[in-house]
Length: 189
Image 1: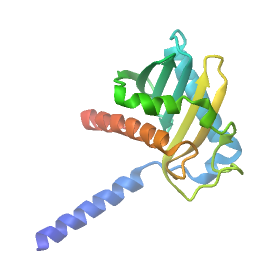
Image 2: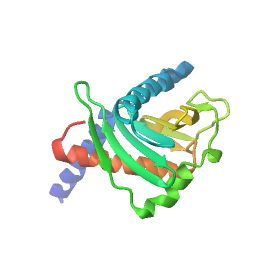
Image 3: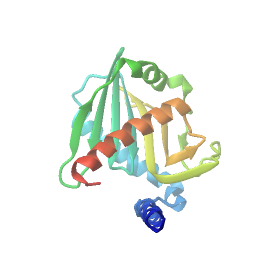
């Protein structure tokens, strides 16, 4: 019995340390959309670097901590997905598989009519949230003319999400799954 209690205590301490080791963004950092501006600049730079010669009608980007990115492009009915990990010296980019099971949610994600046209962050007057926790996120849907149809900077755990729940959970899950593969492979973050 003592062994089980020690294991439970060890797991609890490990979990608490893991959670507290995350770089949480205090709400004060979102004043005056500075978080949105930095994230937007990072996404613009990465888009220019990796997708400037790429043919697409729309591009959707979801990121966590301005370090891990999910780029999804749509050209007519073709979707392509890319994982980008931003490093100080060298970025990592990988094309991800898009299965036919994802087409329905991706079509919804690229429907510009479902989005609020305002920039959404923690200080938005039109957006109210009940729960917000975790690392910073950034989302933008842009067309080939570089018009933003939706943009937000919040946190990973947000309720309600500022976009369709199924779309939001799909993006979070897809990116976190890819990040976890990265973490298992080389234990870097």
